[in-house]
Length: 279
Image (tube, rainbow, N blue to C red; front, side, top):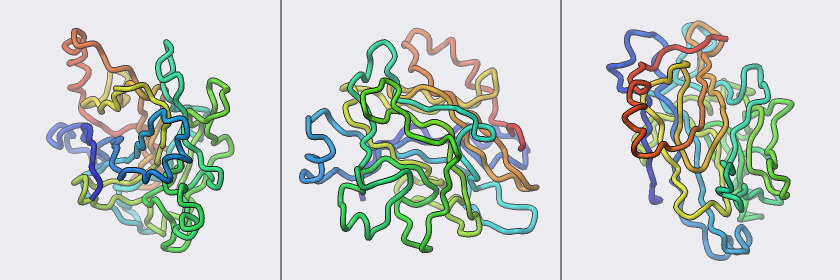
């Protein structure tokens, strides 16, 4: 089992969720839970020795999910990630004020936007460490197809024009929910019911940059907040609505506050996780 660097994975304690029928989504998690890169691969991924961190992105739930054509449907599933109707939201490596100036995604020359197959990894081993988005699986051998589709505006963006991707804009969606790759399953390593959404392999982050954690509850605008030295921007996760359609959960990636400001933030953390906009 790989070493797991964990952060706070729960948005709100179940007791705070109230009686909402839509309270099965518990938040997001960002984890460094992948094993070490073999030295032979590391030389190709990080030839200048800037350092590599692999961060996996998950949606977390309070139980396992499933798919059915009939209503009600399980709320423990993700339908798409990105903006409302795939608007031009972006989620980026934080390079404000000169921090993480050398950082960028590793994007394998033989890879694409989505997870590779085992056969391709066999031919091009560094693909295992590529940056990509998806649903539920880090390879798509079974059931023989990937169910991830990308919105028309989706891309890995290059915000400082240095030739390396360092952000994601627009979003990706489930093209075939019957395959059940996007429903929550139990991960025995993390102890969470979750859906894998992306692998972000970042080269050149500042030493000591903190991945951070999810703040408890919602902020005063009804949005989740993930505090971090690594990311900035905004994104959304759309979970399956039992009566049809989707529920949108907005996420702001914010700076980690200075120690003296933590007490001032406490009131924002007591807002219970509640149902967001239905679409």
